[in-house]
Length: 196
Image 1 (cartoon, rainbow, N blue to C red):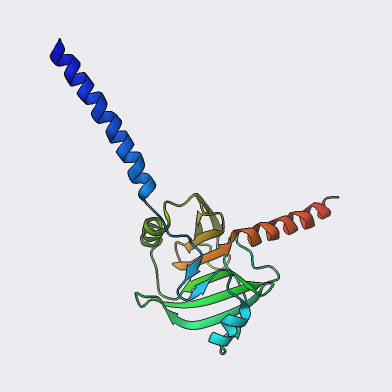
Image 2 (cartoon, helix red, strand yellow):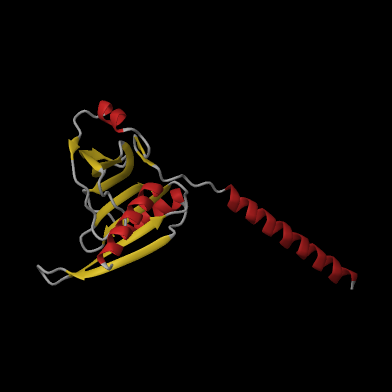
C-alpha cells in the first residue's frame, strides 16, 4: 500500500512540475511583432523614406478580396526588389498623414501558400483568423480561391497573407492596427448613411 501511495505521489508531483514547466516554456516562446519588412517599419515618416529612396514612384494599392485598406493613403512603389531568399517582389509603402501605415509586398515569383504560412507561423505565432473567397473567373469560367491568413495578436499591427491558389498570386501586408480601425469606422459611417 505504501508503494502505491509513493508511486501516486511521485506521479502527481511529476505531473505538476511537467505542467508548470510546459506553461513556463510556452511563455518563454517569444514571437516577432509584425511591424516591419526589410528596412521599412510601420510608423516611419514619409520624409525619412523619401530621403533614403528618392527614386520611389507614386503608386496604387490593390489586393484582391482583402480587409486591409489604404483609403486616402499616399502610396509609393519600389519595383524590382528581392527578398533575402532571392524572390522578386514589388513593395508598396502607404502613408497615412505622413506616417508609414501599410507595407504591401507583392511576390512576382510563384509561391506556395502552405510554405509561407508555416514560415510566418514560426516567426509570428499561429495565425489568428482565416477566411477565403471563391469566384468564377468570368473570362474562362474557372474557379479562383483567395485565402487570407491574419495575424492580429499584436496591439499595434496586423499581418495578412493574401494568396490566390490557382494563380499563385501572393501578397504579404503589414498594417497599423489603429489606422485600419479608423478606416473601418469611417467606412461604417459612410455605409450607415446609405441606409438612412
